[in-house]
Image (cartoon, rainbow, N blue to C red; front, side, top):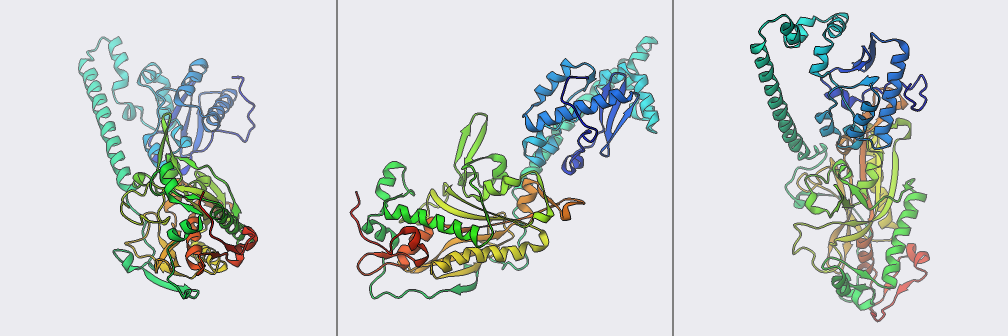
Length: 520
C-alpha cells in the first residue's frame, strides 16, 4: 500500500522488550483512517478497520522499526514519513524518558510511544466513546467533561469555567511531568553511583592492608650482586628511553628500542597464543575508541570519567579505552545470547589509556604507572550458577602465563575496601620485583556477576528458550604486558648487565639473552 518492502506474515509489529514494557504506563493508540490499532500487554488489537488496512499498519510499523534500528532514523525522520503518508496518523509522538534513562542506547531511545491528541479526541468523540465501550470501559469515567466542550458550545452552554479548569489541569500536568523527570534523573544518578555488592567470601576491610594472601608460586631469585630496578636496567641496556618519551608526550610515557620493542611484541604474541591455543579463548581486535554508552556499561561512567581520556567527536564524546574490558564486554550490549553458547571466552590485545588522576607522586620512576600501556585482556560471559567456577578458571589462565615465564608471584583476595567499583570478587596477581624488593600487581581477575550485564543489558536465554536472564561477566589481565616486561628484566638480570630471555619466549625473540647496546 505504501510502496515499502514486502513483509511476510511472521513479521508483525515488534513486541515490546521487557525493559520498555516495564516503564510503559500508557496504551499506545494509533488512528488508521476511521479505526484504531492499539497495543496493550504486548498484544496488537485492531478496531473498526478491515484486514487490508490492519496489514498495511503492520507493514508500516515494521518498516519504521527497521529504519530506527538499522538506518539510524530519528524522531524527525519518522514524523516526515508520517506527514507524507496521511493514511496513518500518529498523534503527539514522544519518547519515553524513563526507557531512555534505563537503556542508554540508540535502539531504545528511538522507540516511539504514540498517544492520542486532545484535538483528535474532540473531533472523533463518538468513535472514541464506542472504542472505550467495546473495551469494557466507561467513556464518562475516562473522558470526564473536558472532551465535551465543543458539544456544550454548540448547545449554547457556558464553557468558561470548564475551559479554565482544563487549562489549569494542563499546566499542572506539565509541571508534574517536569518534576518527575527531574526526580528520575536524580534517582538515576544515585543508582549509577552505587557500587556492586561484594560476594560473601570477600574479606571486609578498609584498604589493601586488609587483603588476604591466597597462595604463592615460584622461588624468589637469589643474586650475588645487588639487583637493579628496571628503569636502570632498561637505560643501561639501551632499550628503554624515558627521556625522549617525555619530550614527545610528557611524563608517564615510554619509548622502547630494539630488543625492548621486540620483547614487548613477543610477550603479546606469546600471551595470545597460550590463551587461544591452550585455554580456549577467541581472539578479537576491537576499536580503541568507544562511546559513552560502552563506558557506562562496564562501570567507568559516570563515576570515573576523570580517570579516562575523553575525545570530543561532533555532538558526542568518544573515549580512549582504559582497558580492552570496555569494548569486549560491550560487544554483546543489548543482545540476548543463546544459553548453549555460554560460557563465551574472548581475549584481546590493545593499548590502554588512563589519565591516572589522583596518582600524583606515585610510582614516578620507571613504567609501573603509565598513561599508555599494552595489555592482553581476558573476558568471559557466564551462567550465574557457574560464574565463580569460571572466575577460578580465568584466574588460573592468567597465572599460567607467569608460570610459563617462571616469574614468582602471589595471589591476593581483595578486601571490600580495595576492590573495584563494579566487582563482586577480585583476585590480584602480584609478581615479585627483586630490584624493588616487593610484589606488584600484574593482573586483576574479577567476577562482576550481573552488575555490568544489567547496565549494558546483556542477557541470555537458558537452554535457548524461556525467559531471558542477565549473564554474569568476568575479566582479568592475561597479562599487563609492560609490567611483565619489567618483571623479566628484574628477575632475569645478570651480573654482567645482560638479561636472560625466559625459555618460553626464546622462539619469539630468537635469542637467549638481551645484551647492552648504545642508545641511539
